[in-house]
Amino acid sequence: MTVSGKADIEGLMRIGAVVAEARDEMGDHVAPGITTAELDRIGRRVLDKHGARSAPQLAYGFPGTTCISVNDEVAHGIPSPSRVLREGDLVNIDVSAELGGYWADTGASFPVGQVDARARSLLFATRQALHDAMAEAWAGRPVDAIGRAVERRARRSRLKVIRSLCGHGVGRHIHEDPSIPSVAVRGHATRLWEGLVMTIEPFLTTSATTFVEDDDGWTLRTPDGSRGAQFEHTMIVRRGAPPLVVTAGARA
Image 1 (tube, rainbow, N blue to C red):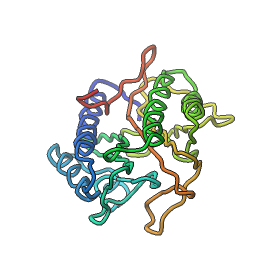
Image 2: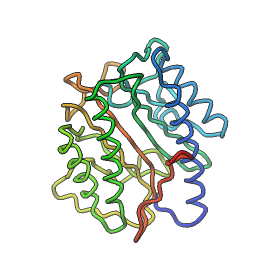
Image 3: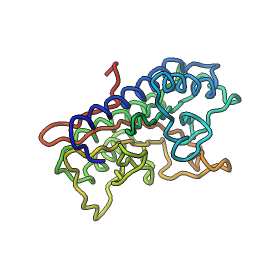
């Protein structure tokens, strides 16, 4: 989507605030002993309160309201009453939704109780990779600059990037063009343009660069059992200024 005026910006800001509220409210309840199904119900309550609809359910028939992935599950984890979070786990919460014809997408990873030093480093570096990449998201900059920024942060932190999980255009649907890779792609000549609505969402791991799909047809996990983290924002690209982040939330 490319915004065409104030109404588009206001609509995106509304749905961005809703998914950010759900993300943060769910994150507040991350603790040993809670199930991923209980976290998902918290997210659903927030979306219902605002009249928003779950994007993965609406677009793809996903079994949960939100995607909740634990440890070596890097994306699309299905909320379950039998998946109990335990001390030392890492959990990723990905919330996307539609409201009034506008769509937004956000995600964050959280420690469950006390986690080890390597997990803390993974969380910190992945969050910083997102911020590094956002610093490149100006109109006229090459899309490739975003992937280079993520890769630099990963190398500096001795971590890896899941190469085929990318950010994407968003706004009128959950997944739109262009693809926004989190690695440098040779020959990727696309440049960001003013008004483009997109996500940046680096997936970093302790050792894996690929994923495998579980038999459930949804959950993606690292093939070597290494843990991953993801942070994601929806933003509007601007000329001569950093992007306008619509999913920052009230705590930003």
